[in-house]
Image (cartoon, helix red, strand yellow):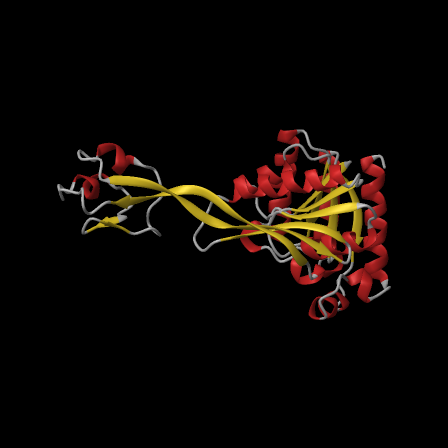
Length: 286
């Protein structure tokens, strides 16, 4: 069983579209959408939910008005301004618990948050593990780890050869959680200044964790000079650029129709993505 995580360093590079196409191409795999803050892989895979589970993480302070003597100490020490008139604003509360520690009459209780839900679903392309965070919830690193653990369990039970992970953008906690322990990272970038900048950061992150990486330049022909700069940079970093996918409106048309582009069209973009999957499979040694 091999796990490949598709990352981008930034949003909007086409990462999810490529993962959806991999879902249509690859055999014997389980899919995991670890972009839990903005999960949208389901829009292309149209899953049927088989299991739904609550995700509990983090804490919020609650003041027991029956025990509170209104000394005002909690309001003084809360640096987030979450307590007013001896009532906690759950949106402002960061769950640090300091107020509960200083309360002289133990009137403040720390309650667990129901932060979101995670799902095990079935799609036309195989099983999908995905999740959805609640409003203003930030514990996405733990939820990403939970999604990956369950995807691995399904792969082991079903004797599946691949776990294909749609990772979150950026380089923060959720990205680290989706990347650590993976067999390969596929980095999808675009030939823009922000794309080039964030590619540098995600390559450094992969190097820090010792995860081998490949690079795909999506929409390479919108700025071929920048694409050449990306290739030169990757050559210096000893990271292989394995695919150059052209810009084509057929990708947008496929999205509108709710299909992976390789299912919607057999044009150049689809052929490039198929070749990209072959490069990924070869790098995984499968």
